[in-house]
Image (cartoon, rainbow, N blue to C red; front, side):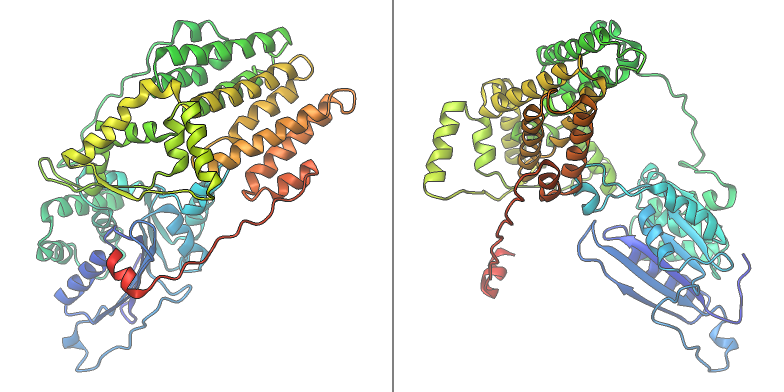
Length: 521
Protein backbone atom coordinates (compact mmCIF):
# COMPACT_ATOMS: atom_id res chain seq x y z
CA UNK A 1 0.00 0.00 0.00
CA UNK A 2 1.56 3.31 -1.05
CA UNK A 3 1.91 6.01 1.57
CA UNK A 4 0.47 9.44 0.90
CA UNK A 5 3.30 11.91 1.64
CA UNK A 6 0.93 14.89 1.86
CA UNK A 7 -0.76 13.85 5.10
CA UNK A 8 0.13 12.23 8.38
CA UNK A 9 0.10 8.46 8.85
CA UNK A 10 -2.43 7.43 11.52
CA UNK A 11 -1.58 4.32 13.57
CA UNK A 12 -3.93 2.73 16.09
CA UNK A 13 -2.69 0.03 18.49
CA UNK A 14 -5.32 -2.05 20.29
CA UNK A 15 -3.75 -4.18 23.02
CA UNK A 16 -4.44 -5.65 26.43
CA UNK A 17 -2.73 -4.55 29.62
CA UNK A 18 0.72 -6.09 30.02
CA UNK A 19 1.28 -6.80 26.30
CA UNK A 20 3.67 -3.95 25.64
CA UNK A 21 1.40 -1.67 23.65
CA UNK A 22 2.98 1.39 25.25
CA UNK A 23 6.47 0.14 24.44
CA UNK A 24 5.40 -0.39 20.82
CA UNK A 25 4.16 3.20 20.67
CA UNK A 26 7.51 4.38 22.08
CA UNK A 27 9.37 2.41 19.41
CA UNK A 28 7.28 4.06 16.71
CA UNK A 29 8.06 7.49 18.15
CA UNK A 30 11.78 6.72 18.33
CA UNK A 31 11.83 5.45 14.74
CA UNK A 32 10.01 8.58 13.55
CA UNK A 33 12.46 10.80 15.42
CA UNK A 34 15.33 8.98 13.72
CA UNK A 35 13.95 10.28 10.40
CA UNK A 36 13.28 13.72 11.95
CA UNK A 37 9.54 13.25 11.29
CA UNK A 38 7.01 15.16 13.43
CA UNK A 39 5.21 12.61 15.61
CA UNK A 40 2.57 12.65 18.33
CA UNK A 41 0.97 9.94 20.49
CA UNK A 42 -1.86 9.55 22.98
CA UNK A 43 -3.24 6.58 24.88
CA UNK A 44 -6.32 5.41 26.74
CA UNK A 45 -5.27 2.92 29.44
CA UNK A 46 -7.34 -0.11 30.41
CA UNK A 47 -8.73 -0.77 33.87
CA UNK A 48 -6.43 -3.63 34.89
CA UNK A 49 -3.43 -5.67 33.85
CA UNK A 50 -4.27 -8.55 31.48
CA UNK A 51 -7.96 -7.58 31.35
CA UNK A 52 -8.21 -3.91 30.42
CA UNK A 53 -8.28 -3.02 26.74
CA UNK A 54 -5.62 -0.34 26.14
CA UNK A 55 -5.44 1.75 22.97
CA UNK A 56 -2.55 3.85 21.70
CA UNK A 57 -2.82 6.35 18.86
CA UNK A 58 0.25 7.60 16.99
CA UNK A 59 0.42 10.08 14.10
CA UNK A 60 3.58 10.50 12.03
CA UNK A 61 3.96 13.23 9.43
CA UNK A 62 6.37 11.63 6.90
CA UNK A 63 8.29 14.77 5.97
CA UNK A 64 11.53 15.74 7.71
CA UNK A 65 11.41 18.92 9.74
CA UNK A 66 14.31 20.28 7.69
CA UNK A 67 12.03 20.24 4.64
CA UNK A 68 9.17 21.98 6.43
CA UNK A 69 10.97 25.35 6.71
CA UNK A 70 9.96 25.84 10.34
CA UNK A 71 6.37 24.85 9.86
CA UNK A 72 4.78 22.25 12.12
CA UNK A 73 1.85 20.04 11.09
CA UNK A 74 -1.26 19.86 13.24
CA UNK A 75 -1.64 16.27 14.41
CA UNK A 76 -4.79 14.77 15.87
CA UNK A 77 -5.10 13.39 19.40
CA UNK A 78 -7.75 10.83 18.53
CA UNK A 79 -8.38 8.44 15.63
CA UNK A 80 -11.28 9.03 13.25
CA UNK A 81 -13.42 6.27 11.70
CA UNK A 82 -12.20 5.70 8.16
CA UNK A 83 -9.10 7.79 8.82
CA UNK A 84 -6.63 5.24 10.17
CA UNK A 85 -3.80 3.89 8.03
CA UNK A 86 -2.51 1.11 10.30
CA UNK A 87 -4.34 -0.88 12.95
CA UNK A 88 -2.43 -3.38 15.08
CA UNK A 89 -4.56 -5.60 17.34
CA UNK A 90 -2.94 -7.98 19.80
CA UNK A 91 -5.99 -10.25 20.08
CA UNK A 92 -8.80 -11.27 17.74
CA UNK A 93 -11.73 -9.67 19.57
CA UNK A 94 -9.70 -6.48 19.97
CA UNK A 95 -9.47 -6.52 16.18
CA UNK A 96 -13.23 -6.97 16.05
CA UNK A 97 -13.66 -3.99 18.35
CA UNK A 98 -11.71 -1.62 16.11
CA UNK A 99 -13.48 -2.98 13.02
CA UNK A 100 -16.86 -2.42 14.68
CA UNK A 101 -15.88 1.15 15.54
CA UNK A 102 -15.15 1.87 11.88
CA UNK A 103 -11.37 2.29 12.10
CA UNK A 104 -10.64 -0.29 9.38
CA UNK A 105 -11.31 0.94 5.85
CA UNK A 106 -10.84 -1.15 2.68
CA UNK A 107 -9.25 1.71 0.71
CA UNK A 108 -6.90 2.87 3.41
CA UNK A 109 -6.20 0.56 6.34
CA UNK A 110 -3.59 -2.12 6.85
CA UNK A 111 -4.74 -4.45 9.63
CA UNK A 112 -2.24 -6.48 11.67
CA UNK A 113 -4.07 -8.84 14.03
CA UNK A 114 -3.45 -11.94 16.10
CA UNK A 115 -5.91 -14.81 15.84
CA UNK A 116 -5.46 -16.09 19.40
CA UNK A 117 -8.05 -15.39 22.10
CA UNK A 118 -7.84 -13.91 25.59
CA UNK A 119 -11.36 -14.59 26.84
CA UNK A 120 -13.28 -11.71 28.39
CA UNK A 121 -14.90 -12.03 31.81
CA UNK A 122 -18.38 -12.14 30.28
CA UNK A 123 -17.30 -15.09 28.12
CA UNK A 124 -15.87 -17.00 31.06
CA UNK A 125 -18.80 -16.26 33.37
CA UNK A 126 -21.48 -17.48 30.96
CA UNK A 127 -23.38 -20.56 32.17
CA UNK A 128 -23.10 -22.12 28.70
CA UNK A 129 -20.54 -21.53 25.95
CA UNK A 130 -20.23 -17.75 26.08
CA UNK A 131 -17.37 -17.41 23.59
CA UNK A 132 -17.79 -14.91 20.77
CA UNK A 133 -17.92 -16.32 17.26
CA UNK A 134 -14.37 -15.69 16.08
CA UNK A 135 -15.21 -16.57 12.49
CA UNK A 136 -17.30 -13.41 12.17
CA UNK A 137 -14.31 -11.24 13.10
CA UNK A 138 -12.05 -13.07 10.64
CA UNK A 139 -14.64 -12.66 7.87
CA UNK A 140 -15.04 -8.95 8.61
CA UNK A 141 -11.27 -8.44 8.65
CA UNK A 142 -10.86 -10.16 5.27
CA UNK A 143 -13.67 -8.09 3.80
CA UNK A 144 -12.86 -4.66 5.25
CA UNK A 145 -9.08 -4.41 5.50
CA UNK A 146 -7.15 -2.94 2.59
CA UNK A 147 -4.23 -5.19 3.50
CA UNK A 148 -4.36 -7.92 6.11
CA UNK A 149 -1.76 -9.80 8.16
CA UNK A 150 -3.65 -12.33 10.26
CA UNK A 151 -1.94 -15.08 12.25
CA UNK A 152 -1.32 -16.34 15.79
CA UNK A 153 1.15 -13.65 16.76
CA UNK A 154 1.21 -14.69 20.42
CA UNK A 155 2.40 -18.20 19.56
CA UNK A 156 5.05 -16.69 17.31
CA UNK A 157 6.19 -14.41 20.13
CA UNK A 158 6.38 -17.28 22.64
CA UNK A 159 8.41 -19.32 20.15
CA UNK A 160 11.05 -16.58 20.27
CA UNK A 161 10.88 -15.96 24.00
CA UNK A 162 9.47 -12.48 23.62
CA UNK A 163 6.27 -10.44 23.92
CA UNK A 164 3.65 -10.03 21.19
CA UNK A 165 4.38 -6.33 20.66
CA UNK A 166 7.71 -7.17 18.98
CA UNK A 167 6.01 -9.41 16.40
CA UNK A 168 3.33 -6.77 15.76
CA UNK A 169 6.05 -4.16 15.18
CA UNK A 170 7.86 -6.36 12.66
CA UNK A 171 4.61 -7.17 10.83
CA UNK A 172 3.75 -3.47 10.55
CA UNK A 173 7.11 -2.77 8.94
CA UNK A 174 6.98 -5.88 6.75
CA UNK A 175 3.54 -4.94 5.44
CA UNK A 176 4.95 -1.63 4.17
CA UNK A 177 2.46 0.29 6.27
CA UNK A 178 4.91 2.60 8.07
CA UNK A 179 6.83 5.61 6.68
CA UNK A 180 9.97 4.60 8.62
CA UNK A 181 12.76 2.22 7.63
CA UNK A 182 13.36 -1.24 9.02
CA UNK A 183 16.79 -0.16 10.22
CA UNK A 184 15.32 2.75 12.21
CA UNK A 185 12.83 0.38 13.86
CA UNK A 186 15.53 -2.12 14.80
CA UNK A 187 17.62 0.71 16.22
CA UNK A 188 14.63 1.87 18.30
CA UNK A 189 14.45 -1.60 19.85
CA UNK A 190 18.17 -1.60 20.58
CA UNK A 191 17.98 1.86 22.13
CA UNK A 192 15.32 0.69 24.60
CA UNK A 193 17.94 -1.58 26.15
CA UNK A 194 15.47 -4.19 27.41
CA UNK A 195 15.47 -7.81 26.20
CA UNK A 196 17.00 -6.54 22.97
CA UNK A 197 18.01 -9.86 21.40
CA UNK A 198 14.67 -11.56 22.03
CA UNK A 199 12.80 -8.46 20.84
CA UNK A 200 14.79 -8.35 17.60
CA UNK A 201 14.04 -12.04 16.98
CA UNK A 202 10.33 -11.39 17.47
CA UNK A 203 10.54 -8.34 15.22
CA UNK A 204 12.21 -10.38 12.47
CA UNK A 205 9.59 -13.14 12.79
CA UNK A 206 6.79 -10.61 12.34
CA UNK A 207 8.60 -9.02 9.40
CA UNK A 208 8.99 -12.42 7.69
CA UNK A 209 5.34 -13.22 8.30
CA UNK A 210 4.20 -10.01 6.58
CA UNK A 211 6.66 -10.12 3.69
CA UNK A 212 6.85 -13.84 2.96
CA UNK A 213 3.70 -15.20 4.58
CA UNK A 214 5.67 -17.54 6.82
CA UNK A 215 6.31 -17.73 10.54
CA UNK A 216 10.04 -17.86 11.20
CA UNK A 217 11.16 -19.63 14.36
CA UNK A 218 14.69 -18.88 15.57
CA UNK A 219 17.35 -18.18 12.94
CA UNK A 220 15.64 -20.54 10.50
CA UNK A 221 12.35 -22.39 10.61
CA UNK A 222 12.70 -25.81 12.21
CA UNK A 223 10.39 -28.50 10.92
CA UNK A 224 9.26 -31.22 13.28
CA UNK A 225 7.40 -34.31 12.29
CA UNK A 226 4.30 -34.62 14.42
CA UNK A 227 3.82 -38.12 15.62
CA UNK A 228 0.55 -39.52 16.74
CA UNK A 229 0.91 -39.56 20.50
CA UNK A 230 -2.64 -40.66 21.22
CA UNK A 231 -2.62 -43.37 23.90
CA UNK A 232 -3.94 -46.81 23.07
CA UNK A 233 -7.63 -47.21 23.79
CA UNK A 234 -8.58 -48.65 27.16
CA UNK A 235 -9.80 -52.24 26.66
CA UNK A 236 -13.24 -51.40 28.05
CA UNK A 237 -13.46 -48.35 25.80
CA UNK A 238 -12.54 -50.50 22.82
CA UNK A 239 -15.52 -52.74 23.61
CA UNK A 240 -17.91 -49.80 23.29
CA UNK A 241 -19.38 -48.64 19.95
CA UNK A 242 -16.90 -46.74 17.79
CA UNK A 243 -19.00 -43.55 18.04
CA UNK A 244 -18.11 -43.35 21.75
CA UNK A 245 -14.39 -44.10 21.67
CA UNK A 246 -13.04 -40.56 21.58
CA UNK A 247 -15.26 -39.04 24.25
CA UNK A 248 -15.11 -42.01 26.66
CA UNK A 249 -11.32 -42.35 26.28
CA UNK A 250 -11.01 -38.67 27.20
CA UNK A 251 -13.33 -39.27 30.16
CA UNK A 252 -11.16 -42.15 31.39
CA UNK A 253 -8.04 -39.97 31.17
CA UNK A 254 -9.83 -37.16 33.02
CA UNK A 255 -11.07 -39.30 35.91
CA UNK A 256 -7.73 -41.10 36.32
CA UNK A 257 -5.97 -37.74 36.44
CA UNK A 258 -8.52 -36.44 38.92
CA UNK A 259 -8.56 -39.40 41.33
CA UNK A 260 -7.28 -42.86 40.34
CA UNK A 261 -7.96 -45.91 38.14
CA UNK A 262 -10.66 -47.18 40.46
CA UNK A 263 -12.51 -43.92 39.95
CA UNK A 264 -12.15 -44.34 36.18
CA UNK A 265 -13.64 -47.84 36.52
CA UNK A 266 -16.65 -46.30 38.27
CA UNK A 267 -16.94 -43.86 35.35
CA UNK A 268 -16.86 -46.74 32.85
CA UNK A 269 -19.43 -48.72 34.84
CA UNK A 270 -21.83 -45.81 34.59
CA UNK A 271 -21.22 -45.19 30.88
CA UNK A 272 -21.60 -48.87 30.03
CA UNK A 273 -24.93 -49.06 31.85
CA UNK A 274 -26.37 -46.20 29.78
CA UNK A 275 -24.87 -47.65 26.60
CA UNK A 276 -26.50 -51.06 27.18
CA UNK A 277 -29.86 -49.44 27.77
CA UNK A 278 -29.57 -47.29 24.65
CA UNK A 279 -28.45 -50.26 22.52
CA UNK A 280 -31.45 -52.26 23.72
CA UNK A 281 -33.71 -49.33 22.83
CA UNK A 282 -32.30 -49.17 19.29
CA UNK A 283 -30.17 -46.06 19.69
CA UNK A 284 -27.26 -47.40 17.64
CA UNK A 285 -28.30 -45.97 14.26
CA UNK A 286 -28.65 -42.53 15.87
CA UNK A 287 -25.04 -42.66 17.09
CA UNK A 288 -25.72 -43.38 20.79
CA UNK A 289 -26.42 -39.68 21.38
CA UNK A 290 -27.68 -40.09 24.95
CA UNK A 291 -24.66 -42.18 25.96
CA UNK A 292 -22.23 -39.78 24.30
CA UNK A 293 -23.53 -36.71 26.12
CA UNK A 294 -23.78 -38.67 29.36
CA UNK A 295 -20.14 -39.69 29.02
CA UNK A 296 -19.10 -36.11 28.28
CA UNK A 297 -20.78 -34.41 31.23
CA UNK A 298 -20.28 -37.32 33.61
CA UNK A 299 -16.49 -37.04 33.27
CA UNK A 300 -16.63 -33.31 33.91
CA UNK A 301 -19.00 -33.69 36.85
CA UNK A 302 -17.00 -36.48 38.46
CA UNK A 303 -13.97 -34.15 38.24
CA UNK A 304 -15.64 -31.37 40.22
CA UNK A 305 -13.34 -28.65 41.49
CA UNK A 306 -12.58 -28.65 45.19
CA UNK A 307 -9.63 -27.25 47.13
CA UNK A 308 -7.74 -30.50 46.57
CA UNK A 309 -8.10 -30.21 42.80
CA UNK A 310 -7.17 -26.52 42.78
CA UNK A 311 -4.01 -27.20 44.80
CA UNK A 312 -3.16 -30.11 42.50
CA UNK A 313 -3.44 -28.02 39.32
CA UNK A 314 -1.53 -25.06 40.76
CA UNK A 315 1.47 -27.15 41.77
CA UNK A 316 1.92 -29.12 38.56
CA UNK A 317 5.22 -28.85 36.76
CA UNK A 318 3.50 -28.21 33.42
CA UNK A 319 1.54 -25.30 34.86
CA UNK A 320 4.64 -23.65 36.30
CA UNK A 321 6.45 -24.12 32.98
CA UNK A 322 3.50 -22.55 31.16
CA UNK A 323 3.60 -19.51 33.44
CA UNK A 324 7.31 -19.09 32.73
CA UNK A 325 6.63 -19.22 28.99
CA UNK A 326 3.80 -16.70 29.23
CA UNK A 327 5.87 -14.13 31.13
CA UNK A 328 8.93 -14.76 28.95
CA UNK A 329 11.21 -15.88 31.80
CA UNK A 330 14.52 -17.29 30.65
CA UNK A 331 16.07 -20.50 31.97
CA UNK A 332 17.41 -19.90 35.45
CA UNK A 333 15.66 -16.54 35.74
CA UNK A 334 13.61 -16.37 38.96
CA UNK A 335 9.92 -15.47 38.93
CA UNK A 336 7.56 -14.54 41.76
CA UNK A 337 4.21 -16.33 41.46
CA UNK A 338 1.44 -15.33 43.87
CA UNK A 339 -1.75 -17.39 44.16
CA UNK A 340 -4.82 -15.48 45.31
CA UNK A 341 -7.09 -17.81 47.28
CA UNK A 342 -10.18 -17.11 49.35
CA UNK A 343 -11.36 -20.34 51.01
CA UNK A 344 -14.56 -20.13 53.02
CA UNK A 345 -17.12 -22.25 54.83
CA UNK A 346 -18.02 -24.32 51.75
CA UNK A 347 -14.39 -25.13 50.99
CA UNK A 348 -13.76 -26.21 54.59
CA UNK A 349 -16.86 -28.39 54.79
CA UNK A 350 -16.20 -29.93 51.38
CA UNK A 351 -13.14 -31.81 52.67
CA UNK A 352 -14.60 -32.78 56.06
CA UNK A 353 -16.49 -36.06 56.59
CA UNK A 354 -20.30 -35.71 56.45
CA UNK A 355 -20.92 -35.61 60.22
CA UNK A 356 -18.31 -32.95 61.13
CA UNK A 357 -19.25 -30.93 58.05
CA UNK A 358 -22.88 -30.87 59.17
CA UNK A 359 -21.88 -29.77 62.67
CA UNK A 360 -19.75 -26.91 61.33
CA UNK A 361 -22.50 -25.73 59.00
CA UNK A 362 -25.13 -25.80 61.74
CA UNK A 363 -22.81 -23.88 64.05
CA UNK A 364 -22.37 -21.01 61.62
CA UNK A 365 -25.98 -21.07 60.36
CA UNK A 366 -27.27 -20.82 63.93
CA UNK A 367 -25.24 -17.65 64.42
CA UNK A 368 -26.00 -16.30 60.96
CA UNK A 369 -22.35 -16.07 60.10
CA UNK A 370 -19.88 -17.33 57.58
CA UNK A 371 -16.22 -16.70 56.87
CA UNK A 372 -13.68 -16.27 54.12
CA UNK A 373 -9.93 -16.29 54.52
CA UNK A 374 -7.93 -14.26 52.05
CA UNK A 375 -4.65 -16.01 51.26
CA UNK A 376 -1.79 -14.79 49.10
CA UNK A 377 0.50 -17.78 48.64
CA UNK A 378 3.75 -17.47 46.75
CA UNK A 379 4.14 -20.74 44.88
CA UNK A 380 7.78 -19.95 44.13
CA UNK A 381 8.61 -20.16 47.85
CA UNK A 382 9.12 -23.37 49.81
CA UNK A 383 6.43 -22.57 52.39
CA UNK A 384 3.79 -21.60 49.82
CA UNK A 385 4.47 -24.60 47.61
CA UNK A 386 4.47 -26.98 50.59
CA UNK A 387 1.09 -25.71 51.80
CA UNK A 388 -0.51 -26.32 48.42
CA UNK A 389 1.24 -29.68 48.19
CA UNK A 390 -0.24 -30.63 51.55
CA UNK A 391 -3.72 -29.86 50.23
CA UNK A 392 -2.95 -31.81 47.07
CA UNK A 393 -1.98 -34.85 49.12
CA UNK A 394 -5.58 -35.10 50.42
CA UNK A 395 -6.65 -36.73 47.15
CA UNK A 396 -6.87 -40.14 48.86
CA UNK A 397 -9.12 -38.60 51.54
CA UNK A 398 -11.57 -37.21 48.99
CA UNK A 399 -13.84 -40.28 49.02
CA UNK A 400 -14.51 -39.72 52.74
CA UNK A 401 -15.50 -36.08 52.29
CA UNK A 402 -19.03 -34.67 52.47
CA UNK A 403 -18.69 -33.06 49.05
CA UNK A 404 -17.87 -36.43 47.47
CA UNK A 405 -20.95 -38.01 49.04
CA UNK A 406 -23.23 -35.19 47.92
CA UNK A 407 -21.87 -35.11 44.36
CA UNK A 408 -22.10 -38.87 43.87
CA UNK A 409 -25.65 -38.93 45.19
CA UNK A 410 -26.86 -36.28 42.74
CA UNK A 411 -24.89 -37.92 39.91
CA UNK A 412 -26.73 -41.16 40.69
CA UNK A 413 -30.10 -39.40 40.51
CA UNK A 414 -29.23 -37.81 37.18
CA UNK A 415 -28.04 -41.10 35.70
CA UNK A 416 -31.16 -42.86 36.96
CA UNK A 417 -33.30 -40.25 35.18
CA UNK A 418 -31.36 -40.81 31.95
CA UNK A 419 -31.67 -44.59 32.24
CA UNK A 420 -35.38 -44.41 33.07
CA UNK A 421 -36.04 -42.26 30.00
CA UNK A 422 -34.14 -44.42 27.50
CA UNK A 423 -36.84 -47.10 26.96
CA UNK A 424 -39.57 -44.47 26.63
CA UNK A 425 -37.82 -41.92 24.41
CA UNK A 426 -34.22 -41.63 23.24
CA UNK A 427 -34.84 -37.94 22.57
CA UNK A 428 -35.92 -37.39 26.17
CA UNK A 429 -32.89 -39.34 27.43
CA UNK A 430 -30.65 -37.19 25.27
CA UNK A 431 -32.13 -33.98 26.68
CA UNK A 432 -31.73 -35.21 30.27
CA UNK A 433 -28.12 -36.18 29.53
CA UNK A 434 -27.47 -32.66 28.23
CA UNK A 435 -28.68 -31.30 31.57
CA UNK A 436 -25.37 -32.47 33.02
CA UNK A 437 -24.01 -29.26 31.54
CA UNK A 438 -25.89 -27.32 34.23
CA UNK A 439 -23.40 -28.48 36.88
CA UNK A 440 -20.13 -26.61 36.49
CA UNK A 441 -17.73 -24.21 38.11
CA UNK A 442 -17.29 -23.69 41.82
CA UNK A 443 -18.68 -21.56 44.63
CA UNK A 444 -21.96 -19.82 43.85
CA UNK A 445 -21.85 -20.96 40.21
CA UNK A 446 -21.68 -24.61 41.26
CA UNK A 447 -24.38 -24.18 43.88
CA UNK A 448 -26.68 -22.50 41.37
CA UNK A 449 -26.08 -25.23 38.79
CA UNK A 450 -26.87 -27.99 41.26
CA UNK A 451 -30.07 -26.22 42.26
CA UNK A 452 -31.16 -25.78 38.66
CA UNK A 453 -30.61 -29.45 37.87
CA UNK A 454 -32.63 -30.50 40.91
CA UNK A 455 -35.49 -28.28 39.78
CA UNK A 456 -35.46 -29.78 36.28
CA UNK A 457 -35.41 -33.36 37.59
CA UNK A 458 -38.16 -32.65 40.13
CA UNK A 459 -40.30 -31.14 37.37
CA UNK A 460 -39.58 -34.17 35.18
CA UNK A 461 -40.77 -36.55 37.89
CA UNK A 462 -43.92 -34.50 38.42
CA UNK A 463 -45.08 -35.03 34.84
CA UNK A 464 -45.17 -38.75 34.17
CA UNK A 465 -46.08 -40.33 30.84
CA UNK A 466 -49.79 -40.32 31.75
CA UNK A 467 -50.03 -36.53 31.90
CA UNK A 468 -47.45 -35.57 29.25
CA UNK A 469 -46.05 -37.37 26.21
CA UNK A 470 -42.35 -38.17 25.90
CA UNK A 471 -41.97 -35.61 23.11
CA UNK A 472 -43.59 -32.93 25.26
CA UNK A 473 -41.37 -33.86 28.19
CA UNK A 474 -38.27 -33.62 25.98
CA UNK A 475 -39.32 -30.19 24.75
CA UNK A 476 -39.96 -29.04 28.32
CA UNK A 477 -36.57 -30.30 29.55
CA UNK A 478 -34.85 -28.60 26.59
CA UNK A 479 -36.58 -25.29 27.29
CA UNK A 480 -35.71 -25.51 30.99
CA UNK A 481 -32.06 -26.31 30.30
CA UNK A 482 -31.68 -23.47 27.82
CA UNK A 483 -33.37 -21.04 30.21
CA UNK A 484 -31.08 -22.07 33.08
CA UNK A 485 -27.98 -21.58 30.93
CA UNK A 486 -29.16 -18.24 29.58
CA UNK A 487 -30.17 -16.61 32.86
CA UNK A 488 -27.88 -17.11 35.90
CA UNK A 489 -30.46 -15.46 38.17
CA UNK A 490 -32.92 -18.33 37.54
CA UNK A 491 -35.90 -16.18 36.55
CA UNK A 492 -36.28 -17.63 33.07
CA UNK A 493 -36.04 -21.16 34.44
CA UNK A 494 -38.73 -20.38 36.99
CA UNK A 495 -40.97 -19.05 34.21
CA UNK A 496 -40.52 -22.21 32.12
CA UNK A 497 -41.24 -24.52 35.06
CA UNK A 498 -44.07 -22.42 36.48
CA UNK A 499 -42.24 -21.69 39.71
CA UNK A 500 -42.10 -18.56 41.79
CA UNK A 501 -39.37 -16.25 40.58
CA UNK A 502 -36.40 -16.20 42.98
CA UNK A 503 -36.07 -13.14 45.14
CA UNK A 504 -33.32 -10.68 44.39
CA UNK A 505 -30.38 -11.16 46.70
CA UNK A 506 -29.29 -8.10 48.60
CA UNK A 507 -25.67 -7.15 48.11
CA UNK A 508 -24.67 -4.72 50.84
CA UNK A 509 -22.54 -1.74 49.93
CA UNK A 510 -19.49 -1.29 52.10
CA UNK A 511 -17.82 2.07 52.58
CA UNK A 512 -14.11 1.94 53.34
CA UNK A 513 -12.18 4.78 54.93
CA UNK A 514 -9.16 6.09 53.08
CA UNK A 515 -6.81 5.02 55.84
CA UNK A 516 -8.16 1.48 55.58
CA UNK A 517 -7.46 1.48 51.84
CA UNK A 518 -3.91 2.69 52.45
CA UNK A 519 -3.37 -0.02 55.06
CA UNK A 520 -4.67 -2.70 52.70
CA UNK A 521 -2.31 -1.70 49.92
